[in-house]
Image 1: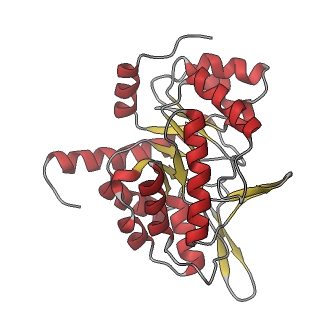
Image 2: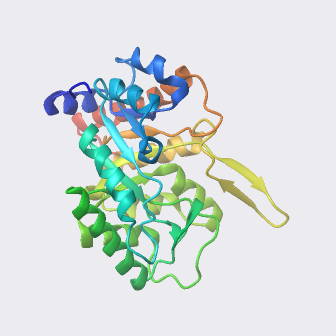
Length: 295
């Protein structure tokens, strides 16, 4: 495969173009020819565990763009060790593509040999904290590097939580040395679904732990007694989430941000337009910071 960019060039690229998009097969050819308009690319490693044409495209693309690996199958919240075979295949991609970030979710999706097609919520208790810390430690030791963990989108909540989610995320980082992938849309979705204050959530997060953010679209689903927001990743980012993102940038700084769009994937130009909106918010923050202005 082609050599990757030197680390100093990588850092410069992420500074000048800090907003990325998810790599989708429909955009392979266009992305290979759009090197000055896309900051970086996120891939789901599970999609590249096998060889073939997809990995060949990724080899070429990774020689031009910074890459982030965002796992969806480690099931860090399961009450069992992380699957060793999964770790081996994931580690092979880390060694091959040298991603600037590696991440997964504060959720569970496997029990024994059963694997579920969803990321399921956890109770925020001392017992859950111990289990998650153990699994995160296992992953970080195997990968030889720290990882980021993403806050979930949820549609039910446990009555017997001992910690708020933001406190729980901070405690995970304190205990394991991992970082936070702060998904702003997830905060908005679950704040609506559970009657929480999304701004208070963000302000409770220790900004020193946040090394990446996600933005995405969602839909509204009406039921007899209430309506829920569903994290579908098939829409433009809504105005309220853009406003919340601006608050998150003021709190955490101008860090790499991803536009997620996983279903009903539009033309690449639509994703680039969404990325430009995020980049404009980052540039506004940088200008205000340089001028010593408060948010």
